[in-house]
Image (cartoon, rainbow, N blue to C red; front, side, top):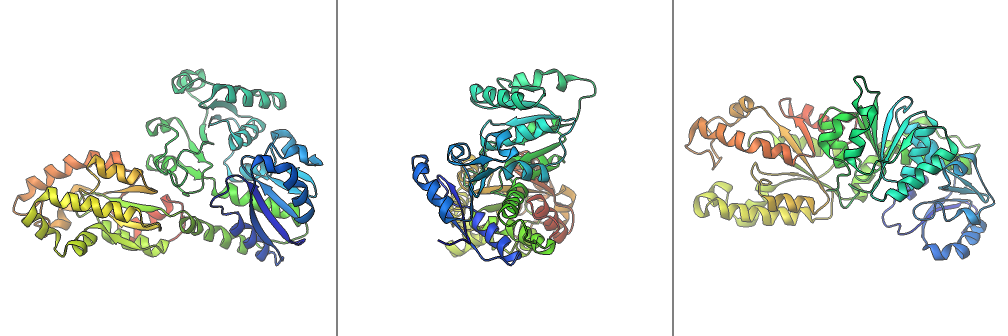
Length: 455
């Protein structure tokens, strides 16, 4: 190792975006250096930290070392001392760039009611930041003793109102949420629920999101979690932790290289590439669902162009595997056989290990077993909510649609309203399907965290 070596310590590290971010930042500032991952168990710290302090120019700390590393350091900067946690080390001094990175990326919390989910490391950072901003805080965690301990640590540093409800019902009964004109409120998620590969996780009931003016989820893989998509589907602004991740990394680089210049254009390019890097490093299937004629294949094609991802059509995969068209399968074997083939191909496609867009047939996800397949794999469901008159116009007489063949408009309308509630219940993100395919795809990309990109 050399004086231009940097790294990240943690356990387990698994996939990490830190090497990509830091090496990109070093290149942007025209600095030499490499960034490595050091997977260290807690028992290894006493021997490893002195060695890394000698051999590296600086390093970052993540779970579970942010607090455990403190005894091995010469001192702490004010933010690290305030939070009792370190994520950056330089010349034996511990810093906390998570704190400033969160404040840079998060909307203003001044005068807000803040509900923080979880009481672990990142929730600790958010609680101290919210208290410093003058917010009223509620901490909701599975372990009440952990949230109470965090609340007391915050009280020791700040004069603030901070409470630890035992459950959601108790939080809902608190007086600030029952006033005729309640203050603005925000939900901050510090739990791992929704983190890749368990993208099915939801840390908060979607129906209660209407209590909040905005939502912040510290998870950044996927860039848009089910929590974020549930908020955006309800018109509530929501943001992932990707901006915080980038901000804290840049702040760490500035500690290690106080005289370096990081050009704004280069930083913008790294941020844009970072969202794509998440899809590359954490494979995710974006499943498009909706009624027949809702535009899944055409919108999917435009979205594939925007995100530079492969598009797979589930019906086409069934036809390729069986050697027959969908209409021929229905005619020869009936719908139950087709649905069995559909689930078989769905299961295979969800396990490809690559990020992709999957255009599913109108009935593909309606069976609970199909929904279970989606939830068991890294996937998110997007519902193209297309009005019935537009669908009727697109389908015409229903040629090539086995479920409509020869049955008239009444069958179309009956099937639409039968399925529509199920589509809504399945959806992680609901998008208006009445625009042009390119407009819908651009809105969908923005909803998924790819703002400002168009096909």
